[in-house]
Image (cartoon, rainbow, N blue to C red; front, side, top):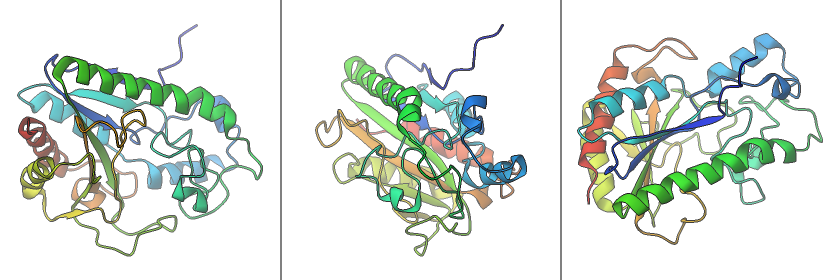
Length: 265
C-alpha cells in the first residue's frame, strides 16, 4: 500500500531568499473520490483539463529556481484546480462564483455543467482549500521571519483566445500579463518584472487577469508581503490547448529567474 501523493508541496529554497514562486494551477491530477463528483465523461474531462490547466508552469518555476543566483522557494499545487481553486475566495466575495467558478467549480470553461446542481462545496473546501491556505500562510510567515519580507510571485498561463468563462476577456492579451495589487505590488517590483520579461514580448498590466495572491492573514495589513502575478500567454511557449512545450519555455524560465534575482530590497 502506497501513500497518496501530497495535495500541495513547499519546496525549500535558500534560507536567505524572500521569494516564493507560487504555482497553483499546473496539475491535472484529480483524486478518484473527487472524480466521482464530476459529471463530465472522461474524454470531456480531458478536454476541460487542457483548457484550464496552466500547463508546464511548474517546470518554468523549477527551471527558474535552478537558474537564480539565490534559489527561491516554491509552493506548488499538486492537484488540479478542478478539485478546488486555492486562489478563489470560498464565499460571496468571489466574483467568479457568478460563472460557477468559486473555490469549487460547478461549471466548465465553456459554462457547461461540471458538478451536479446542489453540490455541497464544504467537504472539498475543508479537505483541500483550507489546508492549502494554512500552509501558504505558514510559508509566507516563514520568509518574513527569516528575511523580514516575503515576495510571492504567482506563475500562471492563459489561452491566446478568450474562453467563455472569462469575465474580462475583452481586454488586451499581451505575451506576459502582470497582475498587481495597489497595496502589495510596489513600483520597484513591477519595474523589475517589466525588465525581466522584456525578452519575451509585450508586457501588460491586469488584463486579461488582474490582482495577486496574498494569504488573507497578511492581505492589506503587511507591506513587507509583496506580490505579483505573472500570466504567460500560452502560444509563447506551448501548443494549445494542453500540448507540449516549445523553446519559449526556456526563455520564460530565464526571465523568471532574472526577476527572482532582481527582487528589490
